[in-house]
Image 1 (cartoon, rainbow, N blue to C red):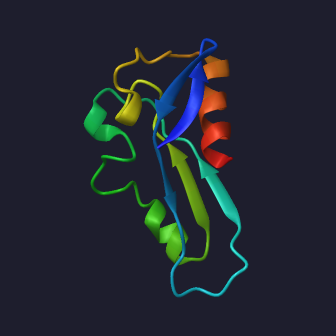
Image 2: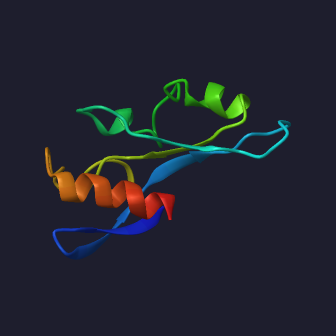
Length: 96
């Protein structure tokens, strides 16, 4: 759970950070973005299975995957479909 903005207003959002275990570093960071989803249950923080990104963590990558605004922790917001600013800002804020 982290803080980001939507149309200049602060909101709380969510995402997943998958960290390698039992793999020697250094650990490159893979920033992934999920395609269009329609149900909250498809958000990365709620999905089961977790889209296969855990395999990349097992290979030594730190995987960062944000829920889209409007899903997960921010499900009280309307998803800003095709809003480039909102989409990239949430990902950047999770990475920070």
